[in-house]
Image (cartoon, rainbow, N blue to C red):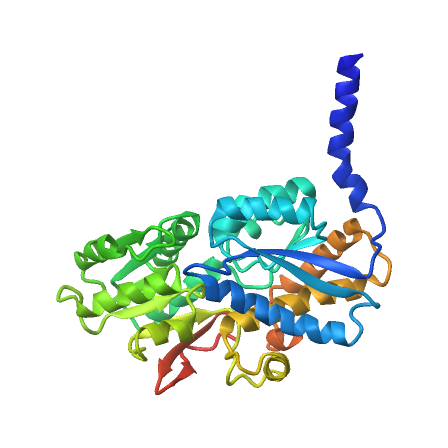
Amino acid sequence: MRRLIGALLVASFLLIPYYLSHVTFEGNVIRLGMSGPFSGGLNSVGNQFLLGAEIYLKNLNDKGGVYGRKIEIIAKDDRYEPKIAVENVNELIEKEKIFALFGIIGTPVAEAIFPIAVEKRIPFVGAYSGAEFLRNPPNPIVLNARAGDLDEIERLVKYYAEEQKYKRFALFYQNDSYGRAGLKGVKTALAKRNLVLVGEGSYKRNTLSVGNALYEIEQCNPEVILMIGSTNAAAEFIKRARKSHKIRKEVRFGLSSFMEPKPLIDLLEGNGEGIVFAQVVPSPWTSDVDEVENYRTLMRQYYPKERLSHVSLEGYFAARMIAEVFKTLGPEFTKDQFIQALGEFSKTLDEDGISKNRDERCKCLHRVHLSEYVDDDFYSVGKDDE
């Protein structure tokens, strides 16, 4: 009898997520859970992404929300530490009763909490991560807003190797799952062009300990140093590399989108020479896409003292994306229907032919934009693939 009761309890526990997925959503507020670095060295990324998402949702809610329901974000600080993020997510699910996880910041954090989302069948939408495990194989609970890390790497390598004709590449990367996946991606992209990585150096996450990485890269005489890591660490490395007598003065730096262009330039006291930034959103300052102009308008309306940024623009796009999914469902829906809608929405994102109006439609940020900083402004570089 005890075994039977135990078996029934286990079965009922396992069926709870399935049951909840088929219950019609009730209530006047749809709560999204976000764990991000709102303090510590990466606080600007978390705060800017949240700010961008909030301006879209504030405006949406002020106009009545989606079928009369407001969408709100419950945000918790994880300081870019996976262990803290796991605690946050468990609390968001159990105590805050969130409907979906939204805007999770960073690959190491996403990797730690994704199994929880899968187990609890919690939708995982708009993560600020280009991690391959969120893309392949496809998972029905996932909807990504941004291009993948491998897309960024491919675009940077193509620019430097094919368009600029450089051959000697080194890599500076964060020594965790994010950086190691980037290392593999860089080697693959170079191999496609019959090139090899001539050197590499890594640093520990949430530190500025870049000395050993600099030493390793000094030994290989690179023409281009690709960089996969955080803004502060990248700025520290560039400062030291520019002072080094063992690295050529004309060396180029190619940065992934996790590094924020404006803050990095500020840390370098305005010296953006030789740096190319990969981004998954168009320019927040100069793009004439209608949705970017709307983003600028809402920033002036809700946060007039905050400056524009690529990160807050991505947060805006991600919030708009999840709101569009809710709009497709109608006033009555279950979590299972929402997850099915993610799959249908994804079909419009992953089409082979990327529309020239991709950004304007705001269904996915598949395009990788390259820019450099010259005379106090950012300008596009590289050949346009579209």
